[in-house]
Image (spheres, rainbow, N blue to C red):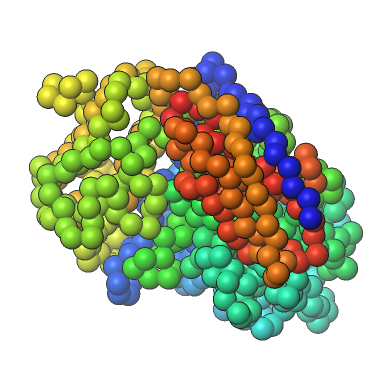
Length: 558
């Protein structure tokens, strides 16, 4: 077993470039996630697919009552949809052929089509010959051959299958589906359920999707279950859309078990207008319901015949570029640090088990809640000293809401203020007349402010309690950045070779640590953010050799 320490280097994004594009986001994506039709009241979106069609991006996700369009992957417009009768189904897939966009959802044979998805004017395919009702379908169009394929499967027993389709014959299948991906929990630890992949059972292999790159076919799939932070996407690669395929040893390539929000599974990889590749995937909260989920966007690059995704810093602000960028050397991070983590906080009121500190503990899965939803409820953080603040991400928790799909969207109205002394306040962001549902808004200041205190005040009564799962302040501290170096690294492979344990000496003044790993020494792209000097995980391949690195970070840098 191999391990080593590598000092992680970051590639900065110039401020001039950031000002030019002004498209800075942070996961989870700030969409108007819809409340569900059933109890308990909660928002949900999952199983996403993004298609570039006629110069726009179209985002479809489960249980959303519609879909979204965007010119730039940062600004999304919701399009309610009534003409697709299966819009409430799980796991949609879309296919662009010529000037037409086709839609299919899980458990349905009905294919819909439109030439203008900006309008809710979809029609069912008249001579439809599609014959499968299997779960999690995914269309794929091979641009070189012109052939169309479908992949499907969602089971803790059955395999993922695929077959060619004949669009000219109403999407009739060209042959019987073939088995493409089976379960291998004895070899691949990440296919085992659990937050540490610790459960002695088979996970759910699901959400297959296909991508062609440089003549190779990358068949991706998710495991072990959407309710875990270990939900991830792996990949098989082959020379033909129906295989045979070889498992990519760095799998899962899209994984995010740590940080503010976890999960990066059941996704879809696509190419943007400029030739950059992205992976949109499912992230999880799973507190009110196991299917309480959000969406995340991750940069993707290729090397050594396989795929990699940057995930670890994507719940911090990052840039969505308007040009071709080498993602292999640039993870798009703005390099703004978390300034609010575990800082002193105050609030107008709070409920038991929903203390003010839970808005700064870097965990979306718990939250602060005021006693009421009344105007005037407020929450405040003391950064300890004046620091440079570039952005604030406001994550609303919707505590005690009773909303359902018919009354789905919530337009919070509030103001964010800053102060040097906690007495005299100035406006940082005015949302007192807000008319948009923005549950995860990243507020980027046009001009960074130096301040010590920030406060958010509710200005419009809400249906439920005014509550925050994260009030996250990003910027620069006042001290010298950490070197990133750590000491005392100990790597232990357990008797179950799918499990590793790492410990290291605590770094003075560290906020947290980034643990990276890979099967190639200079490709330690998979990573997790932790806030203690211990890392334990079971999502490794039994027969693979791994390399590791650990680096420290804090509010001054890394």
